[in-house]
Image 1: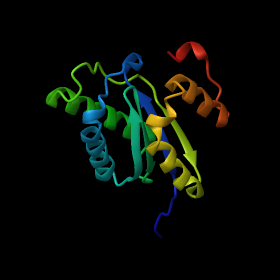
Image 2: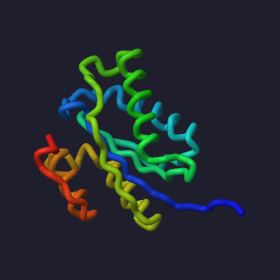
Image 3: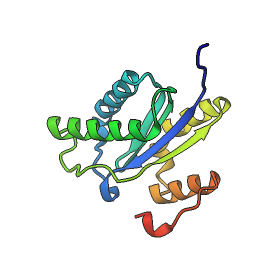
Length: 148
């Protein structure tokens, strides 16, 4: 019998200390690289986007891949790409943790739109405000002292 799943994740993580280091001009190169990492793990990327201090990844998680190992691989390999090719000269690394939220497939289109509109979205809202809203919407308990 085959394994069938539909595990749709929105994965979010920021730069170290939420520094504004992901210059808009080179974000596409970073996003294409991360797409390749996901593809190599048999995960389907629906949308990737963000702003200068964080990224959002909307992906289907293949059943053979653990969320934590996927995020670890994305962070480690993309950090290496950034440093080797110097695409974001002031980049000091990614934050330690991440946020990951599951959604039903019916929410896919609205999530794609949400991620595509990150630049506009963050004209009036900081990453911290957005992140707290997501944690609360998903009923995740957190301690604000850990949210820089």
